[in-house]
Image: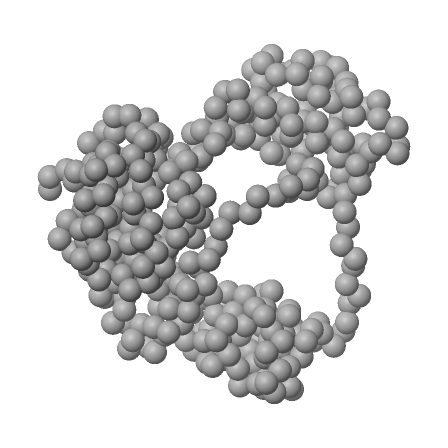
Length: 373
């Protein structure tokens, strides 16, 4: 197979966008560099029509806004596999909106596939072996190697044929509408820009005391600045687990640093002084100056609600087995708990259940009500 062309100029993209408008279905994917740089970015776009595959290099300054009309056109189906991250990245980096989505990973989940990663799916349906080493490759480096270009092209070149197979199965099982509704909802996902203290977004922060939180906040700011300086992901400076241990132990000297699990002698030599410099100011704060971890008001346990959750889970287990689906794909725990708390008695009461999707209401509604009796 010859290598696909890589478009690098605004003029090329303009012509390609016009070409895409002629097709009722296109397959799309992207590669990013989140494993290698501080600020992740889209490094490559892949498009496959029924006739050919074309790659676009967004790192050379071409105007990708020319793609916005065709990608926003809901009359043209866009095939993705696991679209969530891609949709968020396209919106963040290029203000590109995806409409007309058909996600082959969601399709596989609703068909009961136990393994639904793209490599597994292509192996099952086409006997294709994707080289997984390129999933973690640095796609920001140029020039791209020939194997990387071939790998990127394979991500979309089989999706048209895959959709034909999956869609036929979905129709046979009466589940195509389920996937279509899920895809419409998925089109709206976006990255959330969070404000406030960094520790609020750090897993495990809620286990720390107030002074330990102050230490953690200082360490998070230091790590962020260091990662920016080195242009690398945060984990390549210090792992979260190590950072949490440092905040918990609040070391005040080299001898205490050497006892921190996860902090090797190499890391101690490189960052020891900076870590201690980040810890020290938090130790001098007054009680009034220490941060407070916000605690949500504890929900009072209701034995009746808990019993309803158990009944719903038993019901879900049986229905999922009958449909040969993962229970979490059928209906997730958050929705089960919401149903148990609000305790709908009639289908009209489902209007108060925001998490309940239309296909779930139609297919599972009567079963839910019976389980809640």
